[in-house]
Image 1 (cartoon, rainbow, N blue to C red):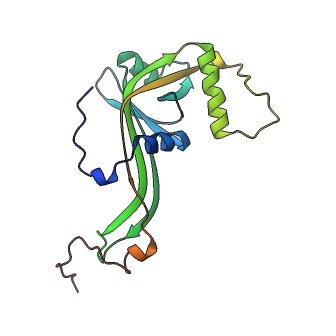
Image 2: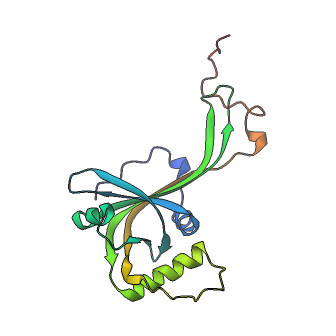
Image 3: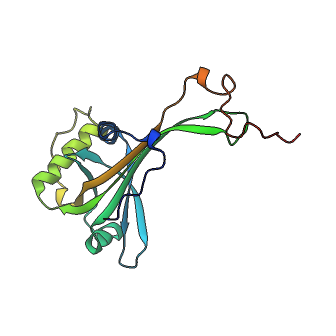
Length: 185
């Protein structure tokens, strides 16, 4: 794995607990792999965070993702939340956004064990659609028609910016990054 670059904005770093909590409740993430031709491939996926792994699924047919995983097990997973855009200064470039993001790096494998696959789907249904008592729980007749992937996280980073209280934003407070510049008339 490549060396982790130095983080420039250490004031925005999330703690390990914050990253784990964020991943456990996030909605959709993006999985990145690299193909034999050297091109990156990114696809949005629903996921489950469990046992310090990102669990995902798609069809059992060999497509772009599965071909890439067979070629190179290195993968990257990103999950982000974008919140409110806010002004902190008098110019348009003095604008920020409330956000959280986590990027996880590691090796991705295919789960062949039917028990692991069923556990993944139990967790997936509990996360995304937990309240349907009209259907049998834990019954997955097409389990062999899907591929379940497990990305074992070796390294992850997370950043965040909280939404400042209204009294700490423009125009109540002027945090313009270029305070001596005059706007054109």
